[in-house]
Amino acid sequence: MLDKELIKQILGKRGTNLFRSIKDFHPKKISICKNGKCFTVDSTKLRSYKFWKGYMNDGGWEPGAFKIFDKFLDKDHSYIDIGSYVGPSVLYASQLTKHCFAIEPDPIAFQELKNNIELNKHLKPHITLSNYCISNSIGLTKLFVHAGKLEHGGGSGSSTIYRGYNNFWEVQTTTIPQFIQSLSITDCNFIKIDIEGAEFEVIPSMSDYLKNHKPTLLLEIHLTYVKDP
Image (tube, rainbow, N blue to C red; front, side, top):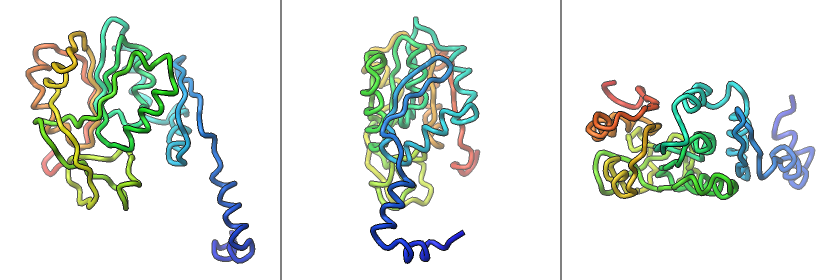
């Protein structure tokens, strides 16, 4: 295999740039069909393209989640998606439910999520987007991002649990009871939570709601992000 510096010397600056543009070429939109649920996503960013290509594989993004969505969601009830990222669960599960309330605090991921919803006119009326950070209190908190610069953020690992990251956004927080009350949600029977370790703070704060309403809970637990799991 040729050394990268040798390739640069052989091709020159213009040739190297052309080689990179060819290597990184990818479609700006991807149409996805999974288990009969079809939607379009924005793959302008190379990172997004790689994520959605992997998502399309049978063993790609969290294959067990789709079986759970298929079994527990129905057209008579709404569901809340906490930690929606760029829409891997929302774009699929919103087609199985009456309405989806999608929550994503990371501003870069939220914009990509919004772009993806805009590409799917058949799904847009059934999805409500919120840029809140679900927490155990109402106010402001730091959302840390694992990236060299904030503008490089938008990955799935943004978290309020401090993990030695230097970069963070200050985001608005709310609680699940307050969120549900503010949107007058009365028919929720399913909640998905994937919030990178903060679930250990959020779950106790919504215990009364869980006991009283007993929604199905799809919870991703991140033991590596807490001191005493």
